[in-house]
Image (cartoon, rainbow, N blue to C red; front, side, top):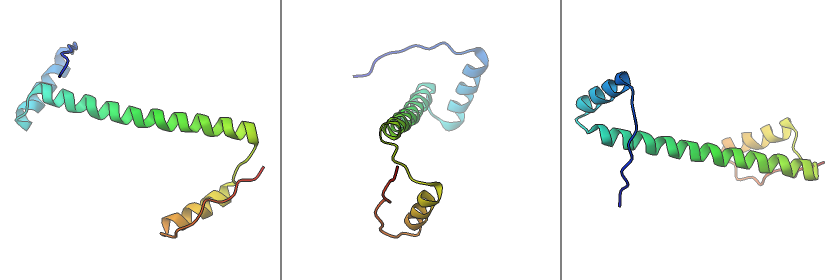
Length: 92
């Protein structure tokens, strides 16, 4: 079931949307739905990344365990080269 939501657009944006819809032979509504879906997906990923960073920072503050830049760079280089490697061991 779809919910009906209304939004107010300024005249310029509404005109741009209408023109794009016409060129793409789609409805303005379908373009808005796609744009909103893409935005929500992107922001969900950003929020997941942010929460992961917060958890990592809290873990570091709690344990003091970490990798040096050189250790992380070397490990990532191996992954990039396609090597099947275990993550390096953190130290404090």
